[in-house]
Length: 303
Image (cartoon, rainbow, N blue to C red; front, side, top):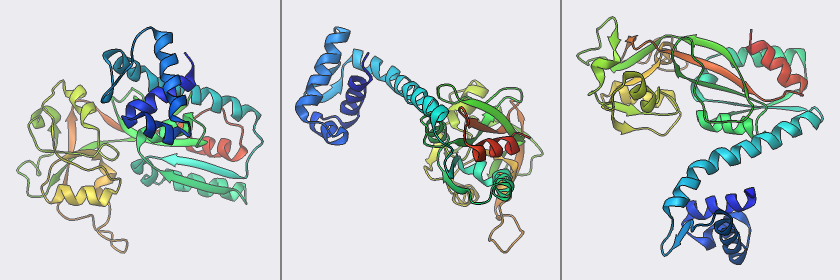
């Protein structure tokens, strides 16, 4: 299957328009139509309905495979380029918000810059999946991601090709309650007791609700509020105001109320999760490392 045709199909399906997909890809509308026709001929079935432009059932199935296929191709291309590229003078890193806030990355960067003066560092903070996909595609040399897993399990990330993963840190999980919540004074709590609670869906900060539903074997954990941002203080303020609960690493609930205070943000109670057995993990992601600075940073973070 020609990846160019597949990319065109994905663009048309996402845009819902042949002309909009042509603008996105820099093609003519005629070229987009030819790509779709060639792909449909190759697979022997229509993939898109034309009015409106939506995937057919066969097209829906192809979309499920398209993202992993294209990511694999980008990852393979990036991995080959890493083996032949000259060491750059910059170090590009991505980290999910809680991984960036953990402190280990800042300490490791300080050591690398001391041992390799002149290295220019670019740090991008973004969502967990964006970190993995960016490292796989060669946009970032290294990535740090956080997430929730059983104590002996690695994080479950989207298919990111041949990325190597190394555990960096783990810590206890807590449920963040408003201080006046009836359960806020407990010494520990099972997530099975909170299946019908009000939850805040903050997928790039808190434990993702699909992960918690899988861990508890319940479909009842549903969001009362969705937060698409990456600012931890905002999430904690929402919890403190009673908008819902969230599962976080214990350290995330201890941020100061302001930079000049050592007092934790008021209105938050952190109750340890006792069941199911889960921990918060931070993992290092990278492909084949050729840049000395990236190799040095990986070595520091892995120890």
